[in-house]
Amino acid sequence: MATQKSSNRHKVFALGELFSGPGGIGTGALRASATDESGKVFRLEHAWANDYDPSSCESYRANLPIDDEMVLCEPVQQFVERFPELPPIQALTFGFPCNDFSAVGETQGLDGKFGPLYEFGAQAIDFFRPDWFFAENVGGLTHANEGRAFATILDRLVDAGGGYEIVPHLYRLEDYGIPQRRHRVIIVGIRSDIGLKFRAPAPTHDQDTWVTAKEAFEMGEDVSSLPNNEPTRQHPTVVERLRLIRPGENAWSADLPPHLQLNVKGARLSNIYRRLDPDRPAYTVTGSGGGGTHMYHYAEPRALTNRERARLQSFPDDFVFLGRKEAVRKQIGMAVPPLGAEIVITAILKTFAGVPYESVDPTWDLA
Image 1 (tube, helix red, strand yellow):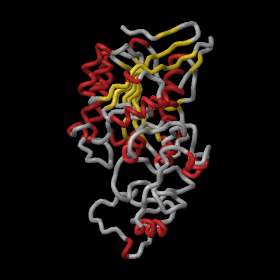
Image 2 (cartoon, rainbow, N blue to C red; image 1 turned 180 degrees about the horizontal axis):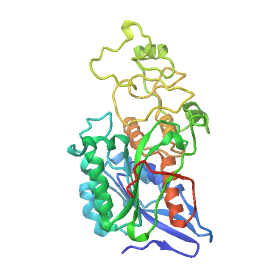
Image 3 (cartoon, rainbow, N blue to C red; image 1 turned 90 degrees about the horizontal axis):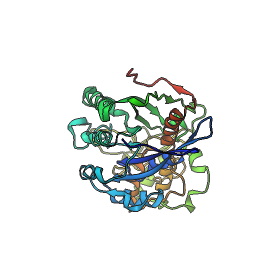
Image 4 (cartoon, helix red, strand yellow; image 1 turned 180 degrees about the vertical axis):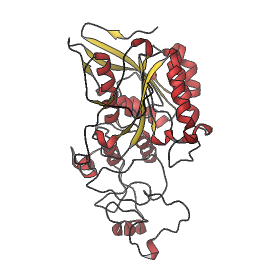
């Protein structure tokens, strides 16, 4: 059985990541730590990571402290065959693909192409038996396949690797200082034989103290001087339309003249040409979508830049995304916000360090 590195002053968990994307969880994990009453520091070091998207892998290599050859860019179906040749880990994170669980997808759940991929996270747990794991997905996971998908996934993770005490919780990330309304299920598991019980960290913000989109854009350096800030060319008709859409409104709720109204039948997604409200957290940053879904500035008639989207996702300004502009948009939108990962992983490390922290009852109590 793998054992974590330790010394008199440090206890280091070697971290493996599946579906790592550009490194949202990894960035948060690197910033997380806990110190016990004797002064011993509990922290993480990156061991290996896997994703199938070449641009995401390049971003990960460029920004995370890890040997380039340990970021393995290939489909997870191939990657699992490498398990015997990888170094041991004591912590595993995986934000398994949300395409089949998201409200903006086809919501096929476990019957889709991406829904079953959680199983590869479970197989990693089976093989490495890490001390703990962190799994993330969209809130829609809980409703997929009439709730059966969520139950199936929880049952699998409870039994993986000889047994884990798991704590699934719905995190409303605006309540944790992230300038975006993003609601995600995070499942934390601690190996049963360790005998520790994780509790969900308590929110740090409420409606009166939420970090707004305007605050996110105005904190730190001006984004115009930062990388990944290339503007999107806007068609004159789009500019004209946006000038008539007030902050917080979208193409459906605004009072638009006939020539600027959208001739679209069927779905009326609320984020179509939706402008941010400067006094509230942004709506959810997404990684894909066609015209009208790029998120729009509250004060200027234009789409957000990738750097502005990264601000809403809590990525640090010195995190440079590699790849073409649309590939960067996808990386940012699909990532787990680093601040959210840091908060939850800090609570995990405090659990191991025996350090108390404010907590709340989990959304789903499996006890």
